Image 1 (cartoon, one colour):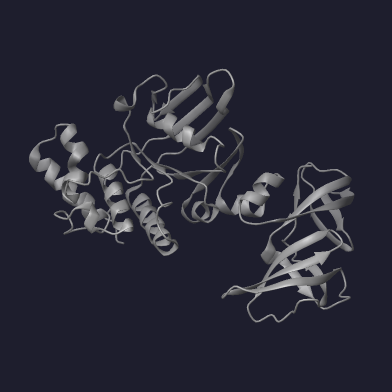
Image 2 (tube, one colour):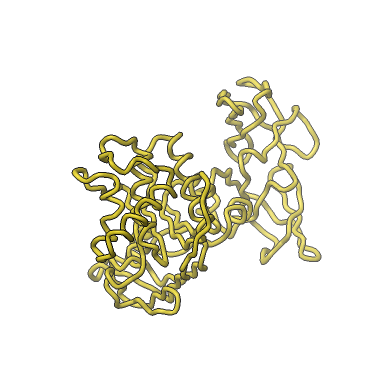
Length: 358
């Protein structure tokens, strides 16, 4: 999709020690501080009940904070109602009016804001063009595919030219192929127009694909903030390691630390990593499935393993391998030909292991 550059009034979003409670017993968001830069796409990622949707709704003004402050641009919006915040939201369910044409759906917010008819028509047409639906204005939502309906919902939000655009699980109702296409469309629109976008999902692949940065949430708090690569390659703890992609978690030992380099052992494998703030002693290690090597039996610097299960996954092979540190999930080249019951060696790629907080 080709996006024409236009003026963006994108604004930053900042939370300062924001807490949201329901009654005395339920804390949905607990002392969260974060900063979304103007023109950035930031994803709130986490399991159900972690607080990500409540955080999004507080930006929109659909939920009011219990304590703390929210700033959009230079304006403290903490106590402002949703109608007084320059934000727009795209919902999971599309929320299109079934009896209205696509054009009328896109134009609805503009008419509510009492823009002139000519301005409404121009902006609505431009919104449809931006999302690749030029010429679809006379159709009803029921005459569109799921992906096209989601684009209409995006266009309806875009034409309002908000300071911040919010997405709440926008792709969850689409099949896998459509999810890939629509997330690429959303990313193209966001980068092309320089929009500030806060995007909520529980889908790790989706978050990795669309985000400038990801805020991982767990138990109403922020677990870690970083770029997709930072979170994938350097998770801080077991939750982030296991939630962002898949990770094999195992016990290891830091044998020594010298010049800020830790010598680590996992069973019979030894390797070196930056020590960070770790000291000698027990440690937890994470390693991605694609960074484990299946080697010939008795290979040097490898631990003994036995192939338990082999799965052909089209573009790659998947193996379950029993080892002294537990059962490991390994992704390997599609042409690898290990078989169930085979004795093998298991090694780590040089940049594979990550040390986690115990």
